[in-house]
Image (cartoon, rainbow, N blue to C red):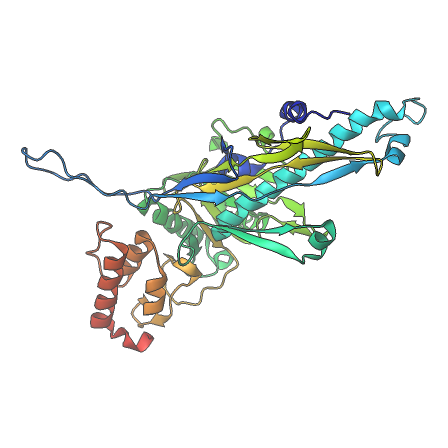
Length: 434
């Protein structure tokens, strides 16, 4: 039995790496902290231009737009498995019944098998945290005290990592149900979706879909005319390296915007025993590698009568209980995944039926596609919906959709809202939308 924590840490680093698509591609490992908290830094990509100045002026100070530093109390993941004398007396998985091996010879093997199983479960939890952030801008973590409570989903301490203020601004709504669109409409819708990110200064490269959406596109003969398999260029990405549950459909060019197209159908078994999807059916996400990062906080144990801390990604730890004649091995981790740019991606639902009647695709914070129709291909928002928007690009895009084309991101969010509300009231008599 290996009791040294540092030996186990080094051992787990040499194990075959666990490949997780969202965690590895979009939230790769960052820093390890000797602290209970992780220091994260997020920002919005600015698009300000540099000012011209007269020669006698030694430069003009520009404000940093949307930069935020925050200390996060790291979540705690800690599965554990026990080894009992009865387990050692039984043959191991795949072992010849007549091998003649002793319980002592099986001890280390079982311990390492347990560590590997728990290591995989920890990475699945990290993958779930990352997909939650992409889908909702936050991840909700329920911390349990017992396995029974975890299975029943009761008596937990809930913590939330949220990366937006007000409403989630990365939810995109199509003008009509995506799966019912023609091939041209689908291509235009994806182009419009990418255009929102371009206005934010974000260059997306990945188009990630669930299999039901990919199937809709791959069985559309008109769409396939735009998808020339003979010209697929995967670059440095080798399909054989993709983890289970992920397929690379190749490269697809949508009106000059080149994407690597992935189909993601990975599943996990929740604590209640139910098999669930990491991404719900109908998901379409526009992403780019390295849009976020995962930092790790320390884990502290009592060893030889003293507290000792480890700042590692995953820390195995063994506890010997001679009184109960059992050895427990746990795997501990305190990951904090977070986006580097809080406006750096978009996610949409291909099954969503929009509530508005706009003839053009539009992005709206909170998933709303408009509440008032003027009858002239202009869909108006209420003042509450406008005030709920917290970022510049959707405000400017909405202003342009109602005919106000003079706004720029040089204005503050508050100034943009004020100008939009004034223009809307003057032009359309927007009091009727209150």
